[in-house]
Each structure stands twice: as structure tokens, then as C-alpha cells.
Image (cartoon, rainbow, N blue to C red):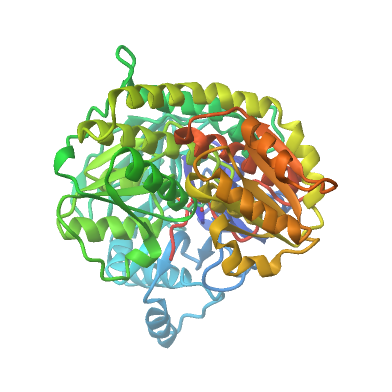
Length: 615
Ligand code: M6R
């Protein structure tokens, strides 16, 4: 969602602000802007739409200044137009803001009564006038911001410039992440270390409620205050995110690059969880009483939720334990009946998803232990959870999740094996063979990727489709859901994933000659049943794409009536355990190439955000 960058420098900051915003584009946005202070005046440029509009604007109307803030806005309050784009400013201050001010209408009324005139429909502008008002009352910038914070309700992060304090930038986090980047003679603040990755890896993550004062002056320095206004130190860390890890390299899109990175990141993730000497899963810091566990509750959103659905099949079959999988935005407002001896697993690539984070707080408030599975180790979810397992997917820039999803699956597969072993449910020989199956996966995925041109050709048959159906049974059912989500996200073709057995209970009414149906049908314990569903689809003349293996292909060809043409893609025969990971790759590639043909904005699909930090 929205992105913040702030820079205090000995150089002009306009071009660095724009560069930083470019690296935040992936989060999703619909307008952008920057502001600087120069000659005791605030200078501001804003534009609706893509960043290129802002770039063009600052090329024709540049702004000067060695201190500045920038923002990519994902509209919540008010349309995605220039008036509502950040920074918002008065004569005295300029503010960029992530998150939502829940009590903004009361504050706005109060400020209007005091004579302030609002220029936008945003909730952000109340912050501008509150700070301005406190400055008018004679407060210094720090006190004015601190007093303003006591009035604001909601989850937010801010970066603020002051006309009369041209060396000072103040930033603060309350429910939305912020990180400082530290370099000699240059300081940065951002919602995401990606923004300043090419310039520094030395970072400092603000804690909840922290406020940072960044100063230029004689030497570049910063001070941190906690939520009670006490000066604090926070540890400096070295960020793993480098300039290189956020480049597209030779790929046309981040999504394609990230799809092709999967053999490497899955291998890295697996190696981080395997004891290489004995090839056993070892989760070093996870100290659970595995034998006492009688239930697992997995809570997540979107693609991460689908990873949880796959895990349900794994844990039930190979670890003999009951699993509930929950959508975080529903779970947090229900009255779930919790039992002891339940392991709560929260899955989140970003580690910042607001609903998942809220569930984490609720669970902790009620004394439940939480294991978080995240891709960003410094994220809010990782920092609040009792235990953390990390996917080593590296930064995922494409909004549509690919390598993060399969890495989540890799960790969950290992966790399942560990649980099954500790609970003496899984037989040693089965355990060994499943570990070997996981070890073989990166190679299999490389093989599928080497043949990616298949999906380019298949994509041609989908470009005129208005609807599409994905079917799976058993352990591939969640991959049908994920395949449909990928397609709708990036190609804007309406797609639904269904359990193949549910076909007759409704969706078959949609099937006709114009409807492509993608069936995930490896030759496994569910195959024969899926084959019957295939027949039902064929009987209605749908365009069929069948993803299967060699045995599956033979059976399909034997049974399908002559003259019916369908596409079949054949995959290596694999253990059922790893099917969901392997069969994810074709649905990702298919969605990518269909979107490519449709000419959509693949890395930043419309209306979507990478990190969903507002409800
Ligand atoms: O960062 P998270 O895993 O918590 O994000 C949850 C969803 O927003 C996310 O998985 C989303 O569905 C994917 N980007 C879709 O590709």
C-alpha cells in the first residue's frame, strides 16, 4: 500500500526521492508526490497516476532542497487525484502518511471551526493542521508532533518537514512500519528498506510508538524517542536487501524473475531447515511440546491462506493432527473457541498484513503462543510472535506472490515432517522418502521452467476468455484456488478455483464452449474421481487444459472420446507430498503469459497492493 521515503542529505534530494519512490511502486499506489524545504519555504510536486507523471512534472518544474519527503498513495479517503496525493501541507509543514486516521472527521470539524481550510478529502490533512496549530501556539516541532500524536487514533506512520526547521525531519510509527537508513552525511526513512537499498544497508527499525528526529546541521545525526517520549537506542542491523536484490536483471517483469528464482530460493529455504549431516528437519529455535499438541490453527490472508490450506492436507495425513485454516479478516471478528495445546501458525509474506497482525495481538492478549511464518524477519509479525520460521525467498517485488508462496509451502512441509516425527506418527522410511522428495523439488521445478514456452503457447487460448475455472481435488485443490487468484489478479480475467467434487454443486452451470477449464490432475489417490469430473466438463464442450503426469496422461487418453481436443501438459511423476509445490509453477506461468498477452501491468496490477496495511 502507500509508501514513504524521507531523505536528509548534503546533496539535492529530488532525484533520490523519485528513485526511492520507484522502488516502492511495487507496493501498489495511484498517485505520488514529493516535498522539500529550501530557503525557508516548502516546495511540493504531486501527480495522479503512475510515477512517470511525477517524473515528467519535476523535470519541467524541478524543486530544490537537501531535505525531502516522498509518497506513493493508495487511495483510501478520497479519489486518486492530485488534490488528494501526498505530501499534504500548510505554509509551515508538509506531511506524508501511511495508514488511516480513524477519528479524522471529528478532528477535521474541530480544525474547521478554528478556521483551517481543507484542500483535500483525505484523513491526512488533519495531521497537517494539528501540527500547524501547535506550532502557532509556540511549540517547537518535536513538541508539536508529540502533542498531535496524542490526538490521533488509528494505525499510521508519518514523515514530516518544517518550513522553519529546515534541517529537521520527524518520522513516527504507530501500527505501520518505518525503518531508518544510516549513511555518512545522509539519512533515510522509509516504510520499506527496499527504498534506500542501493545507498545503504545499515538500518534501524523503529519500534511501535517510536518517533525519530533526523537532523542535518553540522553532522548528520538522529534521535529516537519511545511512545512515552523517553530517548531510546534501537539496534542497528545490516539489511539483507541490496540494490541487486531489487533489480529485474534481464527479466521483463519482477514476477517472471521471481518465478524463475524458485529453484534457488526453495533450495535455500530447505537447506536452512535441514540438518545437512543427517538430512533431518531441524527447527533449532522452536521449542514446542510436540506430543502434547492436539490441534493446529493456521491464520492468514490471500495466497498465504492458500498455503495454509495445503498444509492442512499435509498435517492431517502425515502428522496425524487436526488443522483449522482461517482467513485472518474473518477470524479477528469471530468468537473462536480456543483450546489449549493448539499451535497457532500465522503466515504472512510481508509480516505486515493488518488483519493477520491484529489476530496476532488478539492471540497474545489471551495468552496463546504464536508461530509466525514470514519472509521479512524484521516485520511486525515476526517481532511480536513467540517463534519465527523464515522463508528465504528474498524480496518479492511483484504484487502477485510466487516465490514467497512456494517457499511458505516448503517451510510448512518441513514443519509437518518435524511434527509427524516428534509425535511418532510418520514411519521412518516414509519420513526419509518425503525429505528426499523435498530435496528433489528444486531440480524438478527447474525442468518445468526450462519448458516455459509451453505456457506462452497455451496462453493464446485464454486471451479472449471472460471467465475461467480451475479444478483440483485433494492436495491440489488449494493450488486450483491459487491458480485462479493469480489469473484474476494480473490478467483481470474472472477466474474461480473449485474442488473438482463441487463442480456439480453449482459451477458446472457456467461451463460452455467459451469457458477454459484448467484441471490439476496428477495420478494420485484422487485421480480417478477427477477423471469423472473431466468427463463432465468435456460433455459440455469446454476448452480443457489438463496438468498431469505420464500415468495420468495415459489414463486420460484412454478414456476421453476420440475427436475431443484438449491440451495436456505432462509433469514428472512425483510423490503426492510435493505435488502442490510442483503444480504451482504451471499455474503461475500460465497466468503470467496470459497477462503478458493482455498487456496488463503485471508487477503492479490495478487496485492491488503488495502489503495490505489498512483494513
Ligand atoms: O504479506 P501477506 O502474505 O500477509 O499478504 C497476504 C495477501 O495480501 C497476499 O498473499 C496476496 O493475496 C498475494 N499478493 C496475492 O498474490
